[in-house]
Image (cartoon, rainbow, N blue to C red; front, side, top):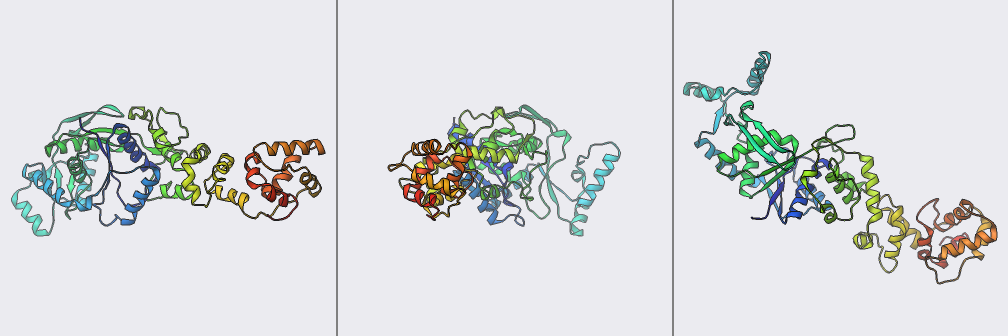
Amino acid sequence: MSAPVVRFAPSPTGRIHIGNARPALLNGLFARTSGGRFVLRFDDTDVERSRVEYAESIEADLHWLGVRPDLVVRQSDRFAFYAAAAERLKREGRLYPAYETADELDRRRKRQQARGLPPVYDRAALRLTPEQVAAFEAEGRRPHWRFRLDGRTVAWDDGVRGPCTVDCASLSDPVLVRADRSYLYTLPSVVDDIDLGITHVIRGEDHVTNTGVQIQLFEALGAPPPAFAHHNLLTTASGDGLSKRSGALSIGALRDEGVEALAVAAMAVMTGSSSALRPVASLDELAEGFDLSRLSRAPARFDEAELRTLSAKVLHGLPFAAVAPRLALFGIVGAKAEPFWDAVRGNLAHFAEAAEWWGVVEDVVEPVIEDAAFLTRAAAAMPSEPWDGDTWATWTAALKADTGRKGRALFHPLRLALTARDAGPDLKGLLPLIGRARAWDRIRGTPA
């Protein structure tokens, strides 16, 4: 059996959000765990709304999430394939011209609804005489082209939802080609899936009905349909849908706000599944035990506050090796880098805060003197070098014995003088990095 091939097919008409990240990651993890290939396909046949900058941002967002496509294609480069498929369907009588205007179709639907009938297209175009067609053409009308469905029930075994059926007799024949000869989503998507050898289509449950139509279209083009899996959709915590146009929770915005990519990935994959939401250290860890059947059929509500909490937990658990290149971008390198990360990571809400604490360790700090007399005694009790992880405990124990202070009264004046901050990482790890010379100057009220 050949390796599976999956695809993520965004339209580059806006910036992708966490709801779009869900199918991208589900497809990416499926390919990763099955030894398959992942295709990024830009559905950019809407030339007026598609933008190069959006396509570039989508690639950048996927790269940030750790999703690496094996192949990138653009539908705007493939119009010849769609034209050939349309001509084949015309020859075989499956694609037929229809001349109704949008207003005429709308009036017809309203009449059907008023009579208690479903608003399904009645195939009036198939009953046009040559004279009627000629009259429409003389008016300057150009036809749109509809795919003639077989009036049967289409069934498939869905990778998420189990056995599924769509009664195509209850559907209107879908328009595949507009009057201006541009293509709607359905035909290019099926043609590309055939040409690119897509074996599994993993996408949102809003495409379930489309699947019945597309399976018939695969068959009409002489190709076996792929396996389908329709996952539940992410909504906001209030139950509202996510939209590229609104920009809500876009991947780029989350990245700019300092949310960890692995937190976004974990939320996108685990929300609305039987897997308990938890921080992960890598996509490989996220892929462990990955199974589409774990996804629920109920709506998956995404909580932005929960994402930010998860992001901090991800950050706290990252080992030095995973962040060393990112630390280097802040100039955090050398022998101090790893013990510094171990000292500060548990207190970070965002990775960029590491640069601030590196400044506390390496740059000049203006100490905050809360109790000068106490700090004079602290300077006198300061241990000699070398300093290590026990120095803080040794120093504060001696001060406690000397002054009788404990708790906040003991620790807070020292923290303010050493770091100029009210709170932060445990000084057990931070103090040896600051070093005795700087610590002495700061305790004595000298910027250092």
